[in-house]
Each structure stands twice: as structure tokens, then as C-alpha cells.
Length: 238
Image 1 (cartoon, helix red, strand yellow):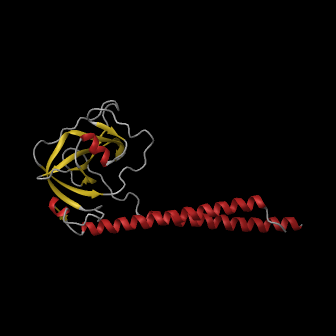
Image 2: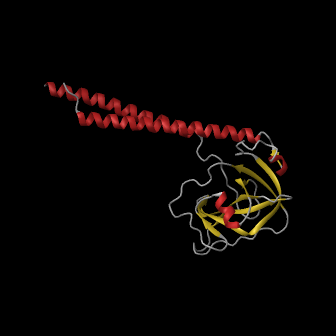
């Protein structure tokens, strides 16, 4: 007796897709675990200062490394990263250039979240301290832009600048500054914005749970098909 071609093909497709999604979620869990392990290793180095950062190998992924920096903010030039929420409230992430004492290179710092104003047409006006400040930050290296729509790279003239994604090279060009190729996130409250950075949004355990869920769906589809096929054969014999 021939198997029903259409239903068999659909079930095989569903099972294959579910197994593929399970494998993808498992790989994501592995990547997240590696990232967390790297962050833990970096944080085990303790709280470094600016000079200690340059004693590390250039090829080392510095994501997760914590620094305590003293210097000045270039407060007249700052960016507002759009579509950021904090405790359910809409707003922006506030980015500005920080120059550690004695350094000609700047560091792009995400100071944290600021609330949306009365209208999206009126960007928040932020006033940074003009005097020397001390910041505790956590570094992030690698892909900073994430997902964004085509045309998001277009930024209007003037300051502050509303942006849809982070690109250190673009921010360097816009500010005519020499920046390091990674950025920092404020850890402690700094009086300007509310820090809320999480290096890993979804933990590896959740990705593994999703992988297991997709495997169960694949198994359920196969079992249901087998029982349906048996019933179909019994009816066909009658």
C-alpha cells in the first residue's frame, strides 16, 4: 500500500523544520554560554583603570571587562539611540564621548536610558557635568549595530543626533573624533541617565528550553502521523 504523498511530505517538512529550529536554538545557547563564560573571565580581572586596559593583548575580546575611568565628557555632542524602553516606558539610550585623563582617544559611552519627551519631535536636552567625573563602565566589543531597517544610517545635521543603531566608525566620523573600536556601558547611576545594560538578554537555559520544545513538537507531529496512518490503513481494509 502506497503512503499518502501529500500528507507524508507535509509531516516530513514539519519535522525537518522543527529539528532545524531546535538545532538553531541549541547553537544560540552555546553562543550565549560562551559569551557569559568570557564575561565572567573578564570580570575576574577586577576593576581596571584606563592604563591597565592597554596592557591586555589587542586580540583579546574585551566584552565584559570592567573599568573605572576618570575624565571629561564632550557634552555638546551626544546621540540618542531610538526605541529603547525601561520598565515599560519609552525613551532613548544616551551616548556620548568620554575622554579619560591624559588620553587623546575617546571612548563611546552609553550612559543609559532617558525618557521620551512630550513629543517625538522634541528630543531630550541633556546637560552633562562640565567638571571631571569618575565612571564605572563595562566594555562591549564586536557587532554593536544589531538589526536595523534600510535607510536607518541617514542622520540629520546638528546635535543631538537621533540614531537607530550603533556604529563606532560612524559616530567617530560624525563627531570628528578618534575613538576606540569598542564601546562602554555605564554600570552605576551617573546623574545623567539610568544605566540598564544587560550583556545577555536571553539566558542559555531559555534557549535550551526552546530547543527542547521544538524537538517535542517534531516528535508529536511524527507520532500523530503514525497513528493517523494506522487508522487510515484500517479504514482502507474495510
